[in-house]
Image (tube, rainbow, N blue to C red; front, side, top):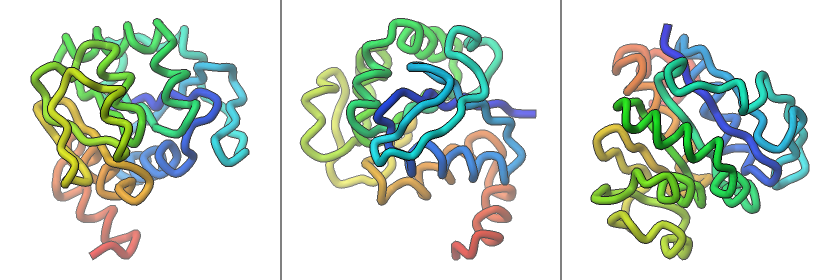
Length: 182
């Protein structure tokens, strides 16, 4: 079974964290929500979520995909956590999927994985990720094992792209159809 981890820090964008968790789980991916700022994390819109594990329990070898939701200050809380950036760097070095949406590509940038990569993120935030090639006209960008999304409106396309990479087109089509996406 494929496994993914979603890093959660106070101030995370709820849609960008929970929609991928939901869609990936519907598609048969085992998803762990890792608490970075505690086990109960408060989102940007004051929704409280309980983590499955503490970030200190997360190992790059144990997962196939690593997901960083945006939101502020959630994305900067992830970026400023050396455990998160070290895991992202190690996972990328092992050719695992590393992903971020909205403001969170700043995490990938700090981990050194955006160099020579195309990416997207929330418009106006690209100065927080100077090492890659920002694509302002794309909602979701996949460049090798790096997947990025522009923001909340891109969350379904982003989550389906992650599911496709992990489980294939057929599973993604089945999940999308069951959710009434055409």
